[in-house]
Image 1: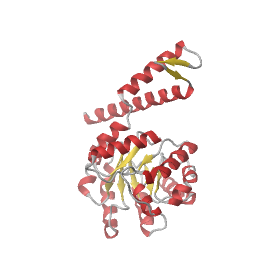
Image 2: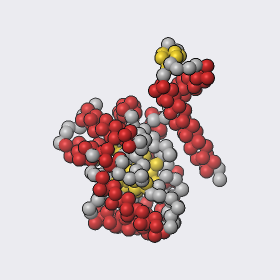
Image 3: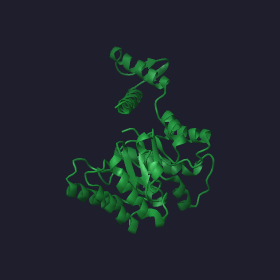
Image 4: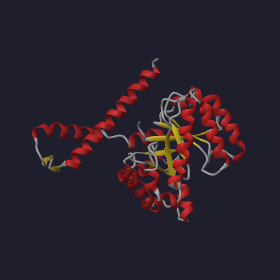
Length: 296
């Protein structure tokens, strides 16, 4: 599953819920937490009960945080879906320790057993505070259900009392810790935080390119206008694909380390080339599936 663009959709906005299947983001995250006022959360759950059976694309639900009454009610909502809803998984906000993941995994297992589901719900922990960053490695390896780690930079800045800067220096350490924890747990590259100034396309692109260089595979999004630039940044460029194809084509004629275009080619470079081609193939396949779906 591609993870270049993950768009938050407020669970209490019915007009937006009706558009979910037509959004071009790789994943949609229905938000029952921050995007919904406390008094509107039950209304939002009722909307999801009504519209969730129509989903035909990758969808996660961001439930409320562990230890809240709304958390329990959100779990009950997922249980009510049964076999009628094709839900990819759950985003857990403010994930702070291994126990948070294990508790949620146990609930999801019971739901699957109760309804005899043939697929397993995945968990996407959202790291939003200092303790979550400190224990990111334990969170990442807490369950086989872990999809990927995601980073919530806005809450993290508030938690540590940092000042938000244009260069995002205050997020560098946490981002690096999350990338490393993801690699150690072998769960794939993580998802970066939202960019709140959705009208600043240049700033969004700059931030996206930077976190891609750190090892993130995509970004959380708050506006549909961010989908296209996110997909562009986190997709291999034509030049990257061409270079990877040239390199792989030379492997049959080479052994060990060799030179190509004035650069040394060894195992890490070869592995990166294969990764670029695999990502490119996955994007082509997804585009093909979407085109086929639009014509049926």
